[in-house]
Image 1 (tube, rainbow, N blue to C red):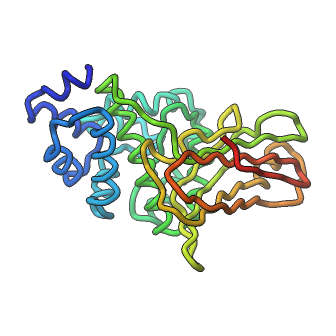
Image 2 (tube, rainbow, N blue to C red; image 1 turned 180 degrees about the horizontal axis):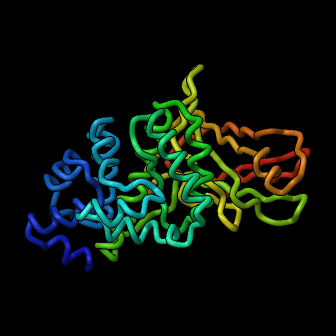
Image 3 (spheres, rainbow, N blue to C red; image 1 turned 90 degrees about the horizontal axis):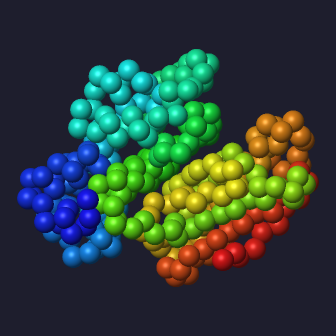
Length: 285
């Protein structure tokens, strides 16, 4: 439906739609306090303000509970009546996953949940089973605090994707931070290279987002739509060793870290030109 039509729904019906997007009681309550919204952009800003400033760990964990485990097709059918049709569509690629991949996902999901106390949350739309398994294998190495930040960002991406499915003119702006990896030794984009973003605060470094490069070597939605980072120092870490291992090539640098300063709310693009024995970077556009 159009934004105008959504905005004129009875409050109870609008709340039901929003509840399919995010299972946090606090998020839904705060969103409905602002309903109806003045514009689609106001709706997006409100969703971000509530999620990042009004919600906390317990609210994020509540939202996570409304998702089935990645790769667990039985739970898609048996649970989550409010949003099972959405989760099924988001995990559609799992229908073609090999038994080996599903087995690894099941094992890693158990290991992940035992370590962190919540299930693996990932924006699954457009990702194949192998990509989701790769992301799971990388993110399980995070601390609980870091992984909570990454997971709640993935939840927000899911929320916005579902809002877009309800309100067709709900615009999703480009991620404030993007990256692009070109393998100059092969003359093509570096695909399925794991990237994690950190916020540097003195001697403290906290992970806040992660992703895999796509077929074009890009991580287009590293940050959820509309999320604006505070000014400061940030680091993108590229896991180079695994990328070249998959290509059966040796490399000199096991990883590449690029630190940079964000000074305003503009879009920042941080490309990486990579080869097995060197790399370079620049401020992109």
